[in-house]
Each structure stands twice: as C-alpha cells, then as structure tokens.
Length: 213
Image (cartoon, rainbow, N blue to C red; front, top):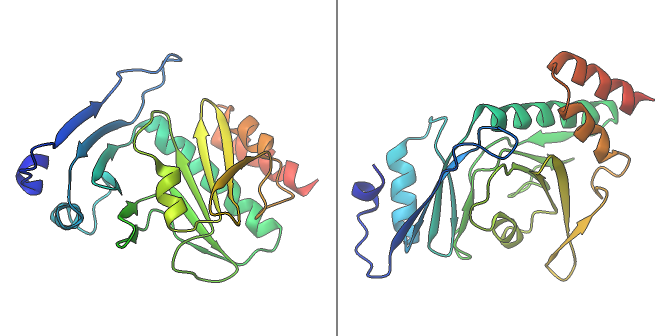
C-alpha cells in the first residue's frame, strides 16, 4: 500500500524496514517502516487514504522521513497500563485534565507530525498536550525532536524496562530528568515496578496503594 499511495519519484528516496522478530528478552517488538524523501503533501495524502477511524498503523513525520508503525501485544499492554496509572494519579491528586490519547499532532510549518501512545493537557485544553507518553521497544525516527517542535512540556519514553523523562527547558531543548515537573510528587519507580507485575488488577491495586500512602 505504501508505494502506490505515496507515489514518490524522488531520486534520493529510500525505504528502511525495522522489524526484529524478537527482542533479547523474548518480547515481541513493534514493526516500523521508515520511508525517506516524503513530502508533507504526500504524508497528508497517505494519512487520508488510511482513513480517519483506523486503529493502525501509526504515523510519525519529520523533515521528509515518514515512519509507519504497527504495535505489538507488549506495546499495547504497556501503553494501557501506564495510561491507567497516570489516570489514577491525576484523579487521586485532584488534577483536572483533558485526555488526548493518540490524537494526531501536526506542525506544518516545522514539518513534524505524530500519533503518540498517550497524551494529556494539564488543567486546560491547548493546541498540543503538556505530557506525551511513548512506548519505544524499538527505535524509529527522532520522536523527541518532533515533540520539541511542538513545544510539548514533557515527553516520557518507556525504553529498556525504564521510563525516561524529558523536560523542555526555556532554551527550547529537552533535559533528561529523574522526576516529572508536571507531576512532581509521582515516584516514577512505582510505575516501573508495577509494570513488572503479571496481573493488571494486582498492579493497579499496588499503584493506587502507593500513591495514596
């Protein structure tokens, strides 16, 4: 489907398939295709052709590179569990939020587009969310640069069984942090520990108990 829709004729265009069968720990990873030399117009055309109500694939765009990603069972488990944990924390601590989920984010002038795993606006709606969460069992195009161009205050990545927190500085660059500035009382290690559990119910009970104490 990719080639007919994009209809690319750039001399320097290329396609890279990132599809490891298994990660070292046996986990099934995401599947990613990166197509280089794609115009903004063709990116939008491809997105429209896939349809507005699709569950996948997910698209990311940066400076002519288009990443087409299909998720795995483990990717979806982590996304769902972390979303539940953050929702429990926001409710328990009295935050008013606007959930954005996987809603498409675009910045045409800066040639960047994304469909994050989960996202939230804190306290009031904004053009782009304050907090974005991405599961990265494998690597693709530079997601942090995409979100920098949209001035997302914080980006969290799940990588190598850890959550990495990046906080946007006044300089316009991200700095990796040990804690969230948006959710300062949340101990990130609690999420990591709960994600290692086998039972969703047990993990959520443990998380709720930890943030309530």
